[in-house]
Length: 480
Ligand code: ADP
Image (cartoon, rainbow, N blue to C red; front, side):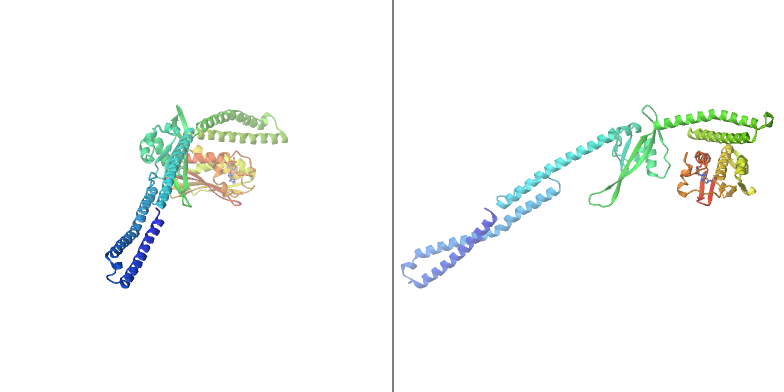
């Protein structure tokens, strides 16, 4: 019986009984007033019948009232159970099932609830297995990558690592998964270096030399911060980092082969170029025979180009020294003016050819001596002065000088040529880089080698330049 029927029935019985009792009371009253007290109609038979009717009527009323009173509790109990069931589902207990009693409406509610719980259980099982399958798939991808990969969460715990990374780290997966990388790095050199570089993003990152694949290998580390938009959020939040190690051994080997090749060629070229220059000197000697004007012009051009060739082979040799890590410094105490004089002498002919006036700024007593490889630093100054002359307009002026600034000695070369656009101030120190549109001939090596030479002495080589106003290159060494 459903609640509505129960309610209707209870109220119906109640109302009917009340009506019956009222009618009976009225009839009883009428009989009592209409009949003679000693007439048979008012006899004990009638009295008993009326009494029974009252008893039954009152009992029915009581039953009706009882049913009405029981009604709220018969609704309350299943609702409570339903609430509990919903709470269980909210707590991910999808095994919860309801039996809300015999009421038709609640049977339906319980059935719907149970169906929903079953579907949720099914859905959860399927999403879990999907998630597991997805996780395995991603793990398989990470593992099949031949370059080492390490994934860290935002607390720097290792959350994934592939076989290649385990191999180079020489660690077991179980020993590092979910462990703090900084703690692990205390016992692992490679991890220590990776974590240090990850925590100090500004530092220059040299390739890592690691013993892998049964040989010495070189790896370039790449640090990728991982960001994600969390559910319900709009902004990306940082969730960790991925460290990728790129195996650059092959490039290193090719680079070394290139360096050896350039070094050999430059060495081989030096001898014939020097021989050409010697022969030209002989040709210039009148005792061999006088040259006519045209021949003299030709010989001058051959000499110029041979000198240029010699300069380039010298640059290349310097470059190979730096690249092969074979730069050997032979420092000795040197006065900056000696280096400046050397550079001026080496550039005198060129300066005369372009009508450039070289001015020297040198406060003799105020500049400390340097402890440097004078050959190398003289080469740098020569190169800077040569650039200043070559990139100046004809009949211009160039300043070369030195000065003391606290614990530092600065040597500088300044020109008033076309200057260099600020966007190239960094790239001009890269190998083979030449400012786009540069017409003057050159190799793009001089400044990069110069920087390497100066930095090998723990010094700095910097540029200050403005387009249209000229450039100033400054070498700076700490002297105290
Ligand atoms: P190179 O002069 O042989 O090309 P460098 O390494 O000495 O090589 O110089 C790199 C480039 O920087 C040059 O090609 C030129 O474009 C620019 N540069 C260097 N010095 C100056 C200067 N004093 N004025 C203007 N541009 C310069």
